[in-house]
Length: 263
Image (cartoon, rainbow, N blue to C red):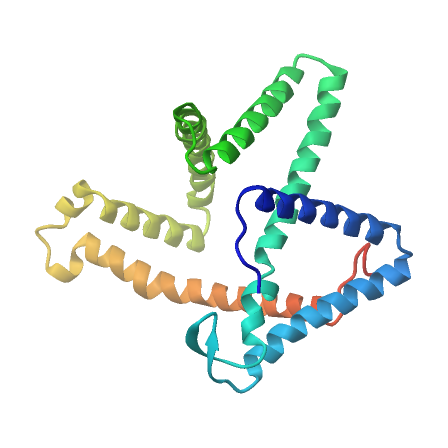
């Protein structure tokens, strides 16, 4: 239905999508609250109904984008029209960028000792955005390619590694507080954590190498992870799935409450 675009047409489609999104957001914000509620409810219900019908309607062999596949009359529209995740991700990123720009602009205008961090934010974001867009063009220059590698592979990955290494100290501190022996549950947690950690390293495996195979610490660790921990993880996943289904049904049927849904 939609053919890939390149060159000037690609930029035109991007600009048109941005303008159309801004216009839709402005129109929604200007609508009366009651009318806005019904617009959002109608669009949300029709979108959810599309997926429900496409999933439950009987399927048959048909041609989809030149290939044989199983589907019904709604299936050909799934990819071009119903794949809403990229649009939602784009809006989420856009709102995040707008929020960051508002926050750091206020800090720059007030100008104090912390404002230099906001200036660095603006410079880094603009540089990385321009470098990434230029690097994705056909036949980018060597300078642009090198700049992208320096910014992403050099600076960004190093900063990410630094952040995760700092977080590791907080995790260690939280684990120490959680593993303090104050109750039976904490004692079991501490013993299990020690067994799992010792089973991950060579020294722990050497300590039990003389014992029967079924008492080797790596065997016990594997039993804990696959037989004890796995059912608990699956139970949590089932609970999350049921909760997600409940929230999805509330949104689809217009039962959710919030600034955009109230009468």
